Length: 116
Image 1: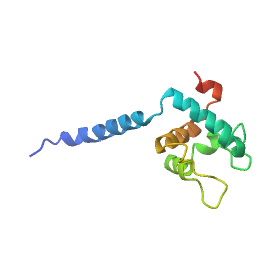
Image 2 (image 1 turned 135 degrees about the horizontal axis):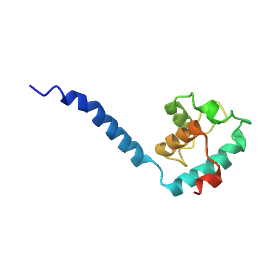
Image 3 (image 1 turned 90 degrees about the horizontal axis):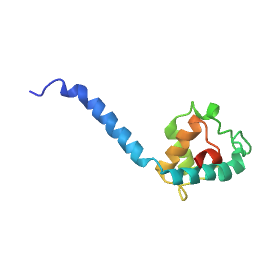
Image 4 (image 1 turned 180 degrees about the horizontal axis):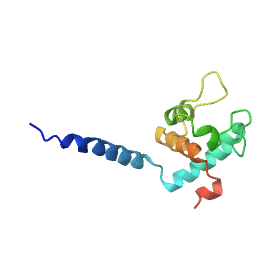
């Protein structure tokens, strides 16, 4: 018979592995700065230079925080068929798309903040 306490440690082990995998997928600081510039410049052309809306919706913390992270990342990566929103998978990885989505939910940094 296996020790019953082993089942208690299993969720913690799974969570630790997921956190380690997410950290490993985190773009390095130079890549993060390039992603911030891309979002501010390229996405800003439709979503507004301050990301407060334009042709596309606002990408502010208030509008992004309640949305599911996976949906945001998928929209960034694959786009939205039938709309002007292109997929960016030729320029970003799925990990990059998730990082951008997380940053949008937290409040996207300015280019000057990304250089620090």
